[in-house]
Image 1 (tube, one colour):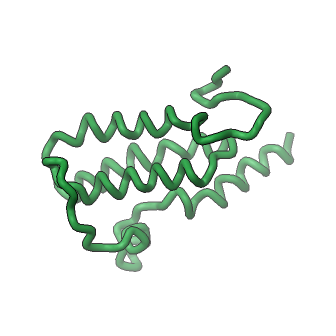
Image 2 (cartoon, rainbow, N blue to C red):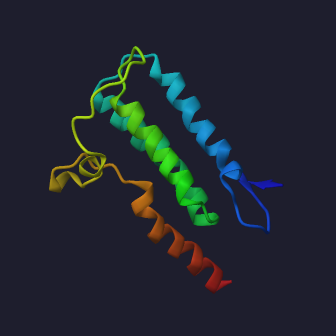
Length: 129
């Protein structure tokens, strides 16, 4: 049974339970991947659509780190691959890209680094109810 796109179950969630999230991310990238986007356009697309998708899920269920790692891998490959599908060179480490702009990064927030604060929000909601 689903409620707001989240599978409601009593057991521990597995990678297969979040496959829909990853396929939605792939669909968004495939719809934009054929178009010629600049680096700034790719960063904006990653920030607004891909990295914002797991926020609701993380605050309402226990998303595994493996799912978030796959989502981050999807973002990295979209950012550095060329438009014709060939591999592009990674000029900057992903950890440098995820730094705030004031520290020389591009301001993207890694879902793996955000998981602690979002899980504490989930724990707080359990404590309050």
